Amino acid sequence: MAQFQPVRGTHDILPDDFARFRSVIDTARLAASLHGYREMATPMFEVVDVFARSMGESSDAVSKEMYAFTDKGGEHLALRPEYTAGICRAFISNGLQQHVPFKAFAWGPMFRYERPQKGRQRQFHQIDVEVIGAAEPQADVEVIALAADILRRLGILDKCTLLLNTLGDPESRVAYRAALVEYFSAHKASLSEDSLKRLEKNPLRILDSKDEGDRELVKDAPLIENYLSSGAQAFFTAVKAGLSQVGVPFQVDPRLVRGLDYYTHTAFEFVTTHLGAQGAVIAGGRYDGLIEQLGGNPTPGIGWAGGIERLVLLSDPKPTVQNCIAIVPIGEKAEADAVKLAAELRRHDIAIELAYKGNPGKRMKRADRLDCSHAVILGEDEIARDVVKLKNLKTGQEREVKRDLLVFELLPNMGVFA
Image (cartoon, rainbow, N blue to C red):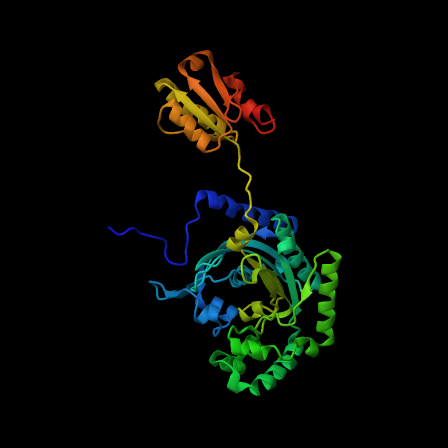
């Protein structure tokens, strides 16, 4: 009989790994809450148009990588490839326009059909931050500073470099688009097939091309900094000054772009070379035109997403494990009493390990394997005298404790935990 394995591009997150995985989420959640962001979640699938409109129907993420399907009711749906579109859709459909600025933190699985590699799977997980309804450059500074704070708390900020650029305002992009069309039109013979299509629809996306021939042409392409309006220049200056004020170092990268028209002003990535080739750990930007494109009223927004698997690989977090107490009953009468004692202690938020069977020796070995700090040993003699034996599994020290005082001995910062 064939043995089932995880589907290609997916992986099981086993308990030891999930402890590190959860540590990244908890770190991000805490930092986000300290910045005033509230946690939320959206469905793992939406109607296809939510992602097609937000990511561009011709983008690789939509045309090649999106898991799209028709359900039994004939509705065309897709598993989410990213979080921003779903949060923006939720903002519109739940009538949250009167609650701006709307500041959200979220995390969860994403799905893209791409070649699996280290830190990148077909089902992967992201943390995500969005601010909707704030047009000021201070919002850009805050979301970037929050990303830096999370990386700092994970101990990996020094492994990352913040790349920063401006995409300008709509006025700037019109002028820049014309300059790109003129430049790339003169080199049509050298453009890839995909970039020839992009030249007609959105020449900025050529700047993101992975084709080697395209990348050579991009080296000499016009830079947007030469086409910025005075307003766009002032906005970018304010973002750079704000980041300097809060102590977040950055490098301006004039080649960092976002191809879709609804992106404006700030684009940024925290990149690292510690996972092999340079890759983004957290990436984001300002999307002032997205809400309107999804059917809402014109509303500015900015946000970012970070890959949890990559953050785990980069930080190798050491999660704090709650002290675990093993209850080891000796004898049939003690078995029943141990279940009652376990329930009593758990009501006081004390983590209890109670094996379902096995002699005391095997149960003690299991407690040691699970790294329990103490064992509560309970036999018929102890039950008769209303006491338990409390054994420190790290030192081997053992002593008797009155049953009604046990919870006080085990509570954090008291007794054995002092």
